[in-house]
Image (cartoon, rainbow, N blue to C red; front, side, top):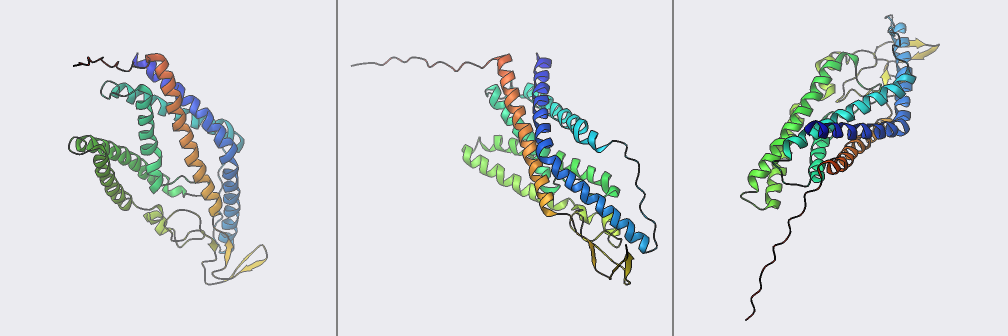
Length: 302
């Protein structure tokens, strides 16, 4: 029975992944293309600046996977596989909790999916939001990955402790008071967490690269305007670039905002569909517990 429940969770996740792919293909893909176009232009300018300054141009590696494959099969595989895995995990959590929590199956599924949405995506997003291509340096990929996974693990643990605190407090206070105490404790610890973890721009590798073409001190890895950082003019394509002159603009904030907004909507769609589809499949499989019937009471008449 447990395996069948988990398979239904994975199926619900796959359905959510298909919807997530369609959404990403329609809305996010044009934004990603804009980011890639910006990155290509930026790389060309950096090569010319380095050559004009007497340095070596950057070496582009071969395109292992074409952009067409990435934007179709690649993104579809990634979103559907992730969603199916999350659906299976929601099902596993349901199997572990359904005998201990006296809630309707569909209600419990929604609570678990909400827990996952917050812990896996939204809370880590507050500190380390999603970024399109062109944002993020190759020499910090490993560090960024470790920081993000740390944020995910800490968020899930913190949410679990908040639920535990609420269950403890509700024995002494009303539900409203227990919820307020738990929420306050969560906000205090979560604020401390995001304050302790470093901003990406403050990573030592980024600080060390701040004096190179195309890099600048900033709180994030969002590309800043490219300027001539030398004290002498440079000539690029027959044009003289004075010291401090902007050669290429920074990353478009509108493109960045749209990408992150679409990321939030996409994940909301995925987790919401998992909860909706799995809740429906689950109740068709295990049924809905019947509501207790009221016991008739005798009324004495004098």
